[in-house]
Structures are given as C-alpha cells and as structure tokens.
Length: 145
Image 1 (tube, rainbow, N blue to C red):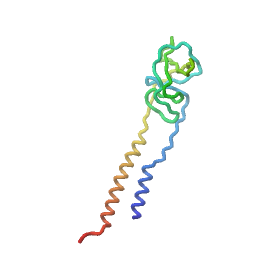
Image 2: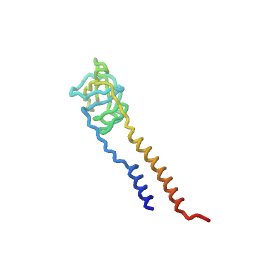
Image 3: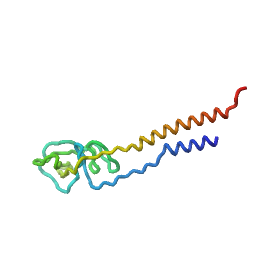
Image 4: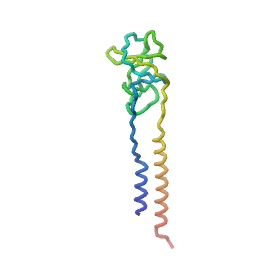
C-alpha cells in the first residue's frame, strides 16, 4: 500500500512539471514573410497596398507565421510607396497612422519541444506505475489452492 502511494506521488511530480517561461525581447518587432522587421520611431504617410497582418501575438513566447511581440492579431502590414519590402514595411497603428518597420534579417523560429518530452515521460510513467501496481496486487492477492 505504501508503495502505491509513493509511486502515485512520483507520477504526479512527473505529470505536473513546473515550467517557468519568459522571453525578454531586445526590441519591438513584427514578422512578415519569414523576416523580422524592427519597429522604428519614424512615421510613414505614403502607403501602398496591404501585404499582410499579424496572425499571432505574444510577449512571452515565439511563434511561427506573421508574429509580433507588440501588435495584436489582425494588425495590418502595408508596403511603403517608393521603398522595397525587403528594406521596410509600414505597420497600421489605426486612425490613419503608420509606423515604419525596418527589415533586420531572417526570422529564426524555434519550436520548444520540451512540452512534448514531458508528455512522453508522463505517459511512460503512467504505464510503468500501472504495471507495478498490477504486479503488486497480483503478488499480494490470496492464491487459490
């Protein structure tokens, strides 16, 4: 009986990992077309066509796609008249205001696989504990003679 309790406690510890996560961004940015654009302090007036929008926002984790660490999902991106999009784009701030975002380089999205590892370990631990409990009950049960 005491083994069952200890094994159960062990499983709970494995299944409830303490995952502290925080990202410290060096600057505000948007990602468009797999490139990171750093937000400048320069406003833009000559806007061309819409080219995209923020699809994911987070100030804590990294995502793939048109991601931003400052602007909410749905914020629109525009080309700037006379400026190639591989140089800069405009971000819609609302009320007819746009700010320039300058391309920094390729966006290196890195998926965190640690949660997948914890899930696999949890399933494995449940199977092992189940096997041990079954074995202990079989061993301790009265035998028919």
